[in-house]
Amino acid sequence: MAAPTDILPFTAARFAETMLEPLFYFAMARTHDENEAAELVSDIAESVLTALARGTVPEHPHGWVWRIAKNRYARYAAERIHRRESTFSLSMEEDGAFSQYDIPDAAPSPEEQLILEEDLAALRRTLAYIRSDWRQVLVAYYLEDKPIRQIASELSIPEGTVKTRLYQSRNYLKEGIYMARTYGKLSYAPENVNFSMSGYSSDQRPWNIITHKLYENILLAAYRTPSTAEELALEMGIALPYMEDELEFLVRESLLRKNGDKYETGFMILSADAQAKLQEHLLQITPKVTELLTQAIEAEMFSDYTKDIPWHDGFIPEEEIRWVLLMREVDYIGWETYNKGDPNVSTDLPERPSGRWNLLGFEDFHHDIPFVGQHGAMDGIGKRSIWFSQYKFNWNNIANRTPLHLTYAESETLESICLGKDLTGVPEEHLTTLTDAGYIVQDGEIYRPSLFVFRRKAREEALAQKKAADPEGYAAWEKTWRAPEAEAIALMQSYTDFCRGIIAAEVPDFLKDDRFQQDFALSNGTNLRGAVFLEALKTGYISYDPEKTSQSAGAFINL
Image (cartoon, rainbow, N blue to C red; front, side):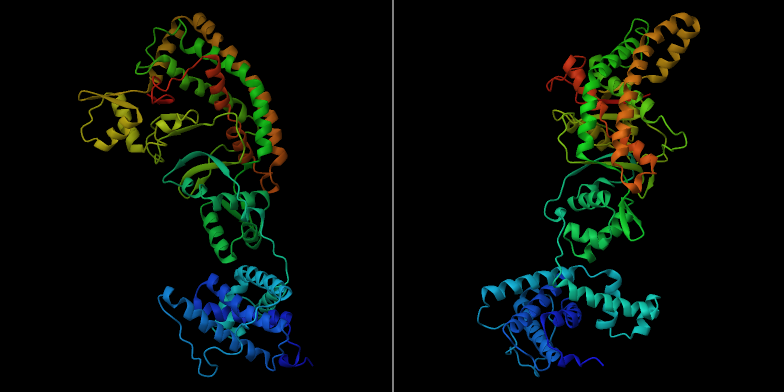
């Protein structure tokens, strides 16, 4: 038969085993805040551990600890009464306001202080990481005073499971006071993660989520190593109840996914090492690719064969039109190479809570190549397509000269102006936004475009007539730009194969069978646009003058 509890020697280990758990819930019932409860339990434990270290041998250990707990709570309440909206009364008649069980007046020795500080630090860490399934049982058993049978019924679990969780939590608390729970690196040295998004969102998601340092690093940690909530809490240095709430939120937003008891990031994050290898290889082929693309553009768009076709409205110089044509050509050869492979792999973007979009993450890395994004009109899902787009050059502050996006309604107004429609009823704020962005200018009472208006349909119709009238002449002209374009595609295919190997080498196990995410990383992680843009500036094919270059450089609308 086991000896009665009060007969066994009352050591720090027995205190942790038998008292920490009920003390924590005693504190929670009075503070209603986990952080304050942990602080109060730490105060109580400090009194107990200090007294034990000095040789105190209580005759009735549990009653002794509870008297200390009540006295420490009384002091806690008195010290914080001015900060609290309400106080929790506690009758002190049987104990006295402040008794001999408070912290001794004499300071502990250096050795005692070191042991005490280590024990208290371990205790605080332990209290912060009580699992949610244990917590449910502990609250019901200690705070709500429910019998095991009732708890099992309410939680739809066997009575044996309730007993097991109570036992596990007691062991957890007992071990925790002496266990080295080390916070992960991300708790004190968070990393920067950048993101690229493709698709459409009806609101500010996911940008209003992924720009938070906490969420960046949760996603990074779960990408590197699929982890339980407890493991992520330790890695991030956050108490488990708060971490569980954040993880549920990220799962709802489809940024994380739960696989069993582990959390995984739902998209790829390219490592700094992978980015360095991709950039080094890209810079080797960029000069030749840029040369071939500029040859193709000049032959297709600006040759004598097409000079009689009115394919743009002349609102900006042709030199600036080349900015858009060059990026469009880059996207074309990319599409011709990135997406070659398994025809059964869908290229449709995933459906998310706020639309259809996908992300690619990038570990912090110094890029020699500026990022060139492509933005347009938001909230257009399910509506008539308006082909407005803006290449955003993150170089020399160009990207900041125009809005991040237009609303669908604003893009409708821009289209109406480009088509010369009546603007009656158009909201004044639309005109202000478009004017401030440099997409339109006011000429008297008339608004006209000040961006590249591409009359694509008219050009295609004119070329079809030329082909019908002179098939041989059309074929000869087509060869002048198809040949350099094909050579660029072949060169790009070699680079794409290299990139695919780099990405495949570091893709985590949980994404090894996800060809869509790997292809997405390939098509969005190479930044061919930025490399070609820099090379074209270097060779003088395009130029930039902050005083003369149109504010709308890189923007266009297809009509």
